Length: 226
Image: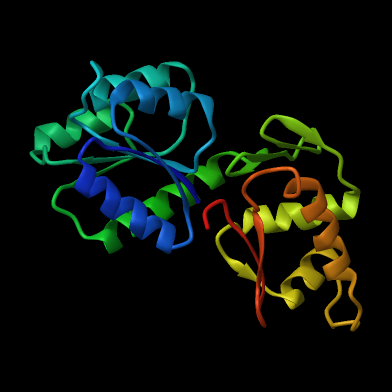
C-alpha cells in the first residue's frame, strides 16, 4: 500500500513509519495540517492515517472536511488521544472511515489500514499506480517518472504493472511467467531477465534512486526505499 501519515508527534511518527515500511508499504509523512492537506490532495494514496490535533493552523477535522469537499474519497483512519465517544463521532461525521485511539497496538493499526484499503479498492477501480516518483496511468497506458514520459512496449508495460501492484513484495520468476507471459511452466529462457534489464534502462538508469531490485535466489522487488 501507499500510505500517508499526518502526525506531529515525532516518536509516534517514527514508530509508525518504521513499522509500515518493514511491512512492505510505502509511507509519506507530514507533521502539520497544511502540509498534510497538500500531500493528500496532490498525490494518490491507498489510505491516510490522520491525527486529530495538529499544528499549522489546521486540525485533523478541518483537514478532512476540506479534503472531502474537493471530492477526495481516500480512506482515512483517525489516530488520536481524543478517545471519548463524542470525539469518535465527530471524526466519523467529518468524513473519517475509522477511528483508533492512542495508545494503540501496531498490529491493530496495520489490520485496520489493510481493511480500509480493501474497501477503497472495491469502491472504485484503480486507474493509476504509483511507487515513489514513478506513476503508471492504466487508462492512458502511460508511464512517467519524476514527470518525464517513458516509452515502454506492451509486454514491458504488463511487467511493470505487475511489479508496481506488488510493490514492497518479492515476486518470483514463476509469478512473473504466469502473470505476464501466461506460462504455467518455466520455459528455461532468459526472457524475464531481458525485460527486467530493459525496464531498468528506462526507469532507473537516469534517476537517482533505483526502483527495481534483484533478490538473490528469489526474484525481484520494486520499492522506493533502500
